[in-house]
Image 1 (tube, rainbow, N blue to C red):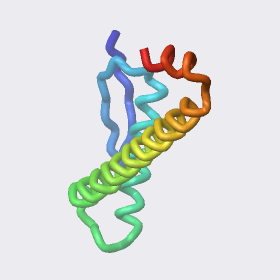
Image 2: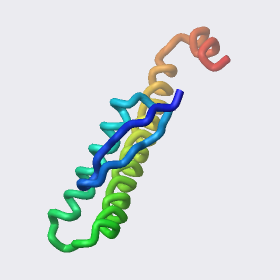
Image 3: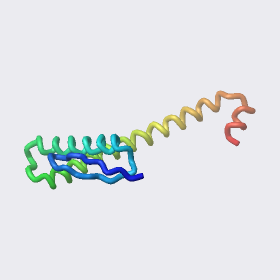
Image 4: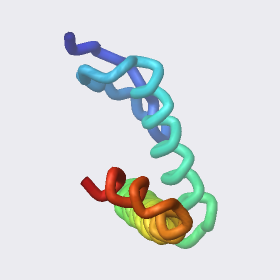
Length: 98
């Protein structure tokens, strides 16, 4: 079911229609608002549309960094699982591989 959620980003009220939980939608909007305000607070950008673009780039950078960290962690865990599997008796190793 779609929810209509009113959010405010940089003093502009918007209605977001989404199937996501309304509280989650508000949290996402608050994150975007904070990112745009950080750009505006730097004093280098005055136009809100340019600040929104720079905020989108910053948020995308956060996402890409988190994905990279997740991939690195998954690779480390896979390596550790392989090391642990070598310590198991041969019968147990075969049951894990199968």
